[in-house]
Length: 140
Image 1 (cartoon, one colour):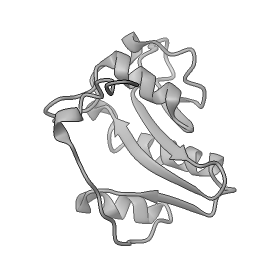
Image 2 (image 1 turned 60 degrees about the vertical axis):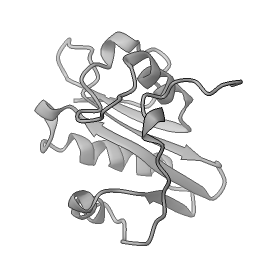
Image 3 (image 1 turned 60 degrees about the horizontal axis):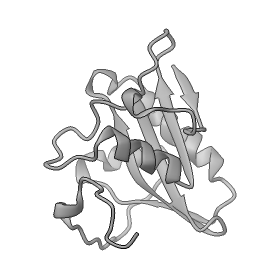
Image 4 (image 1 turned 120 degrees about the vertical axis):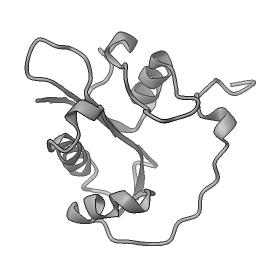
């Protein structure tokens, strides 16, 4: 597996198959935009000549004290192979100088994050599922 920390040379054509189960998933073009706009991103590609992305993780940050991991996705065929662990490990390495790195996750993946050094906390969140596709905001 190859891991890249620069998403600037990726194309939307490399990003199919993510956001499984989302009622209104981002398009590959929007996915590319979110990777390229993140504070940090790590993507995984197979070792062979296949250039499609098989996993990714992103961080948003103030670049001073804190970061948040909003998205970690691995294509279904590559899950449970260590790709997700390596993506997060590499991202945490890039964020190591920060005081806090937070993630909000579903209960079934808490053990995954605990293995990577995260501890349980309390979180609040607001979701606007009608905006799940990542359509541009008016006036933005």
